[in-house]
Length: 343
Length: 279
Image (cartoon, rainbow over all chains, first blue to last red; front, side, top):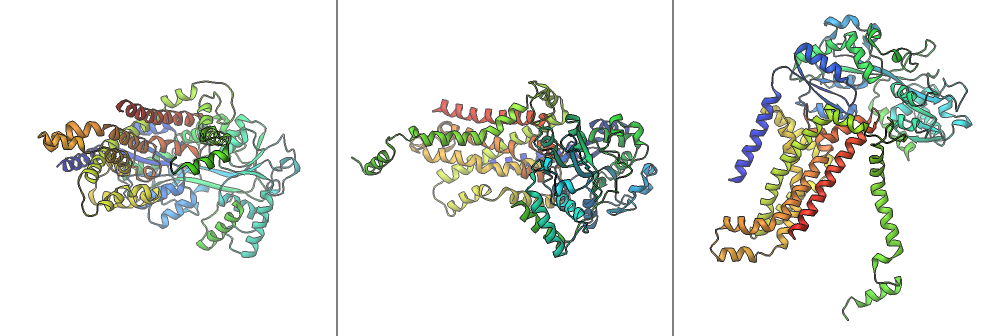
């Protein structure tokens, strides 16, 4: 008896909240945590009379795990470049044909035919940046635009280096230093890479994602870093300089995409178009501190963003290297190298 | 002289004292354990009062980050979701756990009784990530079949993993309680419901309260299952904190974490206080 009343109470609670969730004019966004400008969301809500639910995730993989089963209830996700390719491959994204949207004309043509979504059928740029490293130029006065100082550091930097705790970022930096191709499954070259990493590791202090904390606490003087994090660290430690190594560095882009089973498809399309408006893209950049790939957004961006050397690449810097997802054989080899390195 | 004497004298001979607490190694070890357990939390709390943006460099004391956190609509929303989910899960799971505890201690012997107890406690043994993944696929099938969405699913998932936590202290209390009073009540013509309402339930209350508090805290702190089950607009406080990490931790996260710790500690303290009072 009691159990049945209980069950009916639970069922009615579920039904009740379901009714609330299905109210007219909502949009459910799933984005990286602390990455969405609340003012921009407010503007969207007012402009279209749509109520936005915003939740945060901590990695591409968490997001994928959650939406892969379907029925997650989310409309908009913001996957990184390689993750867009994976999600398109698995049929998780809706074909929205961004090119036919009103604001598509604002997109920087450089970001249209990208490897993860040629012609932008599924996604539009959200924020993009680079992964290189930043150095205290007071501690080390020499040329910083080379990976030499990471893998074969001068005396001043020995034991003062933090690397990201990220398999791909560390291995790709090593491959660039050795001038070997990315997604490498050549056993000889990978063996050489492992030796390089193991010998370099003796000069590294830590491998940690907490770049800003490591640098501002002066725990290290060089850290592998995303450009936005490097800029924020520089605010506390003005002698930091972001390097554009001549051997190359990683470029990445997070993209706005719509899930194939989005419950609010029309609102989601409105949001995608909204994000290609220069003013709205600038609002995101001013909050998240990365570049956005929408032409004309400079006009609305904070002044310190426009002359930040971390955001505005010097003309002499090589083109950022957007690394494609590697096949299974390569991933297994990378895992082996990474496990050995972390032992 | 009882049987334990040889052992005890051996202990005294080896240590020069019969008091375990007086051993120098014991004290040192206790402090070390306490330090390792609580020093990180102490650091986190200290830096929540830091005026600087950094969580590692101290400048001066301020309540700035508490103001930011409390003024942050997302934090308030997440806290409200957490409390709603925890209260519902606690209420429902405690009722179910109480009934299960009564059935397994007062229900006489029935076939599969120990299997039933093992089954109820199973969520404690299965790695949480396995439960999370399993629930994720199961719920997503159900969501698609029924077309029902909403926070009810999250509450349901929390209720399920809270049951064993509520069950343990209630069952322990029941097992310790002799059934003499209940038998006496029955002798005095109390109907089973009356005997339960006026005898068993009041005696069982401390166990039920401990179970409920434990369930509340477990629900409030859960990350893995919540991360995979929560739908749109259902970010709980732990999920909010997790989402901040990759983009750089500010003392605001410390402040939110401190509030969460205080809430948890308050619940545990309340449980102890209630138990002591009942005794």
